[in-house]
Length: 431
Image 1 (cartoon, rainbow, N blue to C red):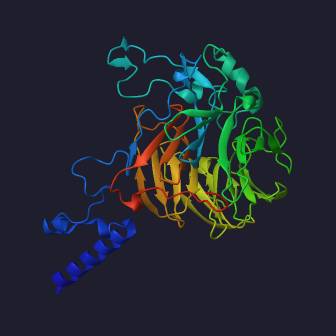
Image 2 (cartoon, rainbow, N blue to C red):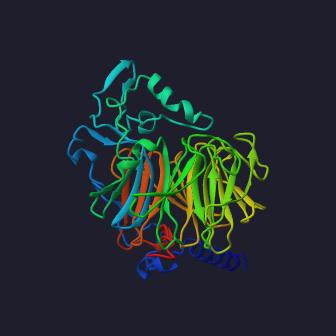
């Protein structure tokens, strides 16, 4: 009797696991016959391997390096701030200028058992090297460039403030360069197009200028500026280093405000202030609802209009209704976890980028952890400092990295389990 009960319990547990990970159809009859049981590999039919990049493979040499451009032979990508795929053939990238394209330095041995740089590990941190420097929570945007210069950096030698807004095609060719806006920007942080806007305006958030710019689809004109350019604050006309934004299906939107601000701000579809919520918490410790430290991400569930807020300083997600009423919260993990942003795609899950573990994380909308993939490194496919990510209509994934610099593209592996892949983008008013 006990043995029969144990078999039943084990069978039910196996069914539950298969259901949770959607692996049922991926367990072959041969695997069952051989006693292998359920496989949790991203590509169950593959022999060997270890799912370093999950259900994806990196697309080598995408995009083509800036060194291939005339006059840029000595320069490469700066800190990769954000990426947005309008389509596989029009991918927007934000970066903080350009960095010298210098080779990895030869190893030095300053003392017993010490060798720098360490083999297989990155040796240059692009986010510190790129102007205006690291720019973490509490840093005054108004003095950031002064601090970058005082650290011994010189513009034109250690960095160039060029090509902050780039657009690449599917082959990685640079097809558009919105250099006309370079001098206006100081720390471009986020780029996106609302899926509910048939005119496909391009939105740029600059956290050091405390402003959000709504541009025409071709980038030739700014049609609206929200926030007061270069002036921090926390009222209806000001931000204090805003970071991200997301839209409701009716075109209204919310802004994460931000590095120094401690609130979420809601606007109607015309960009008129509606409401805001949140106040400063006890950084690293707070569990109280609506208290924030470093509001570094926001995502809207289009089905329920719930607002998911990345309370980065307190390593948690807080969930609200569209008017700011607290609904739920959950932890994103202890150190070294450092969630930078998250999105809700058409699959109905919340996907997050963790700069601390260099992994992409999948949660359901109740906070249950489902899956993760990714690894640290400066080799093709390795991640360091994912600060923005996007997916296109073909399922290709793009990551922008502040520490490695630049952006990378991953394509789905043949035969990959869809449950381990990031969902397709939400597209309503345009394809």
